[in-house]
Amino acid sequence: MIITYLGHSCVHIKTANHQIIIDPFISGNPLMKDFDLNSIEADYIFLTHAHQDHILDAEFLAKKNNAIIVSSYEVCNHYSAKGLETQYLNVGAQFAFDFGKVRGVAAIHSSSFSDGSYGGLAQGFVFTIEDKKIYHSGDTALTYEMKILPKLFKSIDLALLPLGNVYTMDYKEAARAAKWCKASKTLGLHYDTFPPLEIDKTKAVNYFNSKGKELILLNPTESLEL
Ligand code: NI
Ligand code: MN
View 1 (cartoon, rainbow, N blue to C red):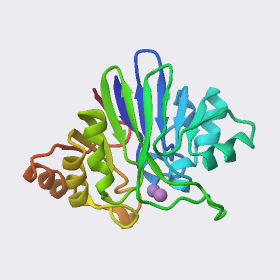
View 2 (view 1 turned 60 degrees about the vertical axis):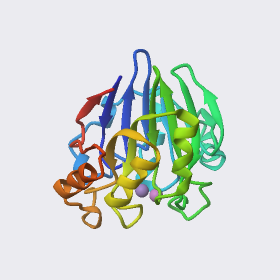
View 3 (view 1 turned 120 degrees about the vertical axis):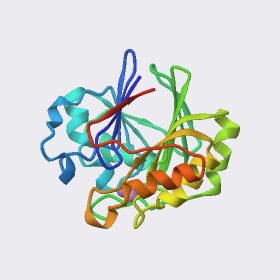
View 4 (view 1 turned 180 degrees about the vertical axis):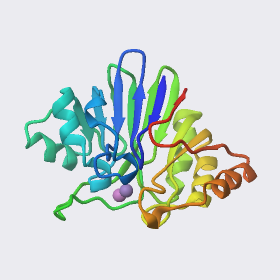
């Protein structure tokens, strides 16, 4: 399958027969200003929490693609009130979709909509697709909850982890997170989008290497194959 980084925490997954997008924040991302939102195809839109930098383009993409929004009870209700199709998936729940299985997993982070209303619990997702396990942590601090993942899933083929500090863990703690969840590879998220989130990419990659872990940093719109 093809994993495409669309900036910030947004990742697009193209499987043999399905397309999934996680945390679409594109039209508000200065690093994605020349990107055409209309080019995105998705059957499902997964939202880790209600912060604007994770949901900004969800409504547009759901309408354009007739996509199903998958998220917490509160985030789903926000979108079903707008007439969009949703699927509840709270922390700890598992659901079998036509493309594979997904489990909601713990994240340590807040969650509110841009008007300040309650956005449910922030969470991450573990996708099992074509025998591969992909963990998108959402925004999170380093947490011992990550140590449960190898017990539940044996291995994580690709972890998608925030690195940018300020709102989430930094790259050093992300390297520890990659160890705790036993990720074979990590794709960095949630850095460089805005000046407070800028990181030294060489240092981050070298730091992961020094801990025996692999960190991949893609430019927005670049892909990797899993
Ligand atoms: Ni957030
Ligand atoms: Mn965020």
